[in-house]
Image 1 (tube, rainbow, N blue to C red):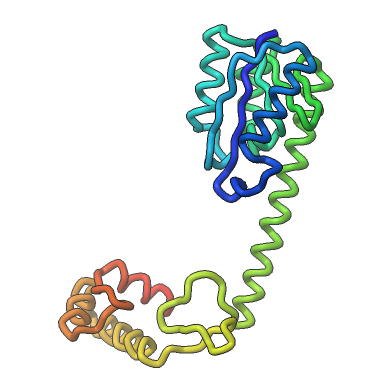
Image 2 (cartoon, one colour; image 1 turned 90 degrees about the horizontal axis):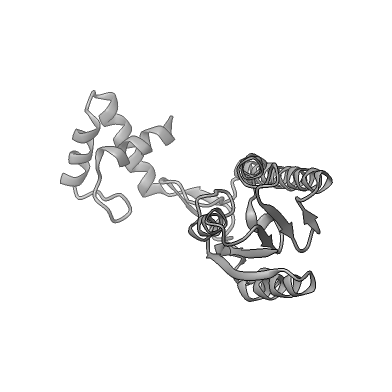
Length: 224
């Protein structure tokens, strides 16, 4: 059977040797040799997330299969193909159902030539998505807790500054005065653009940048 390999690394994973492009190429080549598969080529997406199916190399791999060059897609690990249960369902329906093409994952020993293989594939993808959602929830909870403790989380809001301990935030007196001025001008009925012009005319900058109506809007939103 003729096979096309597909490999991928996302930006944050490129430095991890276990899922590097070279490591994936080697695993797919060895697998095809072991099971007498004719490997006609390997398509590679470098620095692209698995959150979408719109990836050039992945699209090329499927197009080559559609053109009759191969009957099987070989991957090293399921998450190299997709990180979404919905996208997996799309791929199964479009490419790997009713015997159109086969999918094989080296690490998970998945082979969609059988019903049990397709069931295993669905279960593993569901578990992987559940794990990612749990991690995301934990990160969100931790960030909210840090915010409630006055600790820095990402971007430092206008009007605040990093405290000497390098962790907590404290008020920046000069920027707080600017916020008060913006609020006063707004209360006087000035439009966002007029407020921006007033600040710029007084040479009051937005952390080194001139003001515009959008930057004024964002500061008022933070005040609210």
